[in-house]
Amino acid sequence: MKGKLLICLMLVVAALLGMQPNLAEAGKVKSISGAGATFPYPVYAKWAAAYYKLTGIKLNYQSIGSGGGIKQIKARTVDFGASDAPLKPKELEKWGLFQFPMIMGGVVPVVNLPGIKLGQLKISNKTLADIYLGKITKWNDPVISKENPGTQLPSMNITVVHRSDGSGTTWIFTNFLSKVSPEWKERVGSAKAVAWPTGIGGKGNEGVASYVKRIRGSIGYVEYAYALQNKFAYIKLKNKAGSYVAPNMDTFQAAAANADWKGAKGFYMVLTDQPGRDSWPITGASFILLQKVQDRREVARAVLSFFDWCYKNGQEMAKKLDYVPMPGNVVNLVEQAWKAALKDKAGNPVWP
Image (cartoon, rainbow, N blue to C red; front, top):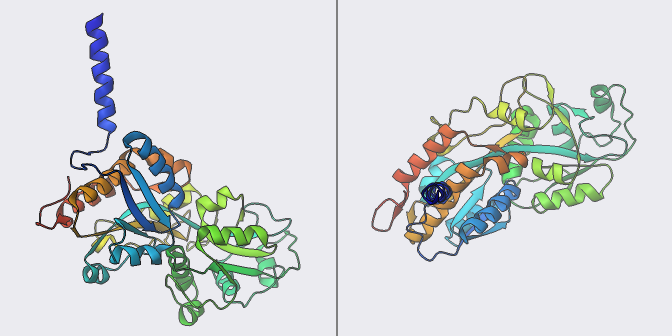
């Protein structure tokens, strides 16, 4: 009986050890630091809390926007940066950086509009662009009314809310608008920060959410988790296939279904305005940025161990927050790339 009990205990310990991150070379690292995108912050915070309980290693993450995260990793003031706007291979090479996708999700237009329920309002791509161009200024404008027959729209001014900081969420949103509106592409373009034709700016997804919550008649764009947490009325968008779709796990996955990560140099991938009847048109991936040459091997190991654990053990947590986990084949590609791309000062691989 004792022998059987001992075997069972050994199996339990082995199973738990199998779930542990590979910390063999993490030494005395007690914390790792990162900064950047607000888009994935809810899931990073959830992962970090679970990881701390498991390992005692704390993640200090500054949710300051993709632009800030890119600046900090370039300056080597954090262990990793996070950006929703992927850097092109030339820029990665220039700064000695390596990037990889960590999670996928959707950017969602949300409104504070009396009498309008969640998902009730339908807006086409062009109409959304025209609202953000300042060309449509009333909620009962004939263009919006035509797209929403039978819906009583208020005679209320539209208050446009956008990001005030350099933001990967903005990059995804304006990348989409540039694809669907020639006028937007010519007048405004796509970037982490743009010269907005109209509206007020909030810092981070949190700032935009705060403004939309307080201002009646407002429209803003936030990462889906923020839309859910704040119980906002989201908009159904008309996608490339002509279908009005709601933002959810299925429509995010549909947009990402045909992404060719293997053929994406430097893991550069844009998921906006993808084909498919069920595709959410403002889907995007969020990326992690690391220095290719790591000054502190043990810290680099601790950072990679955290993300390895998130890939392998954080999928259900991500799904509960309505993020789309990276597929297993993409994770394999990423971790193989870690081995080849990330070195210590002596030129030795830092992973595994």
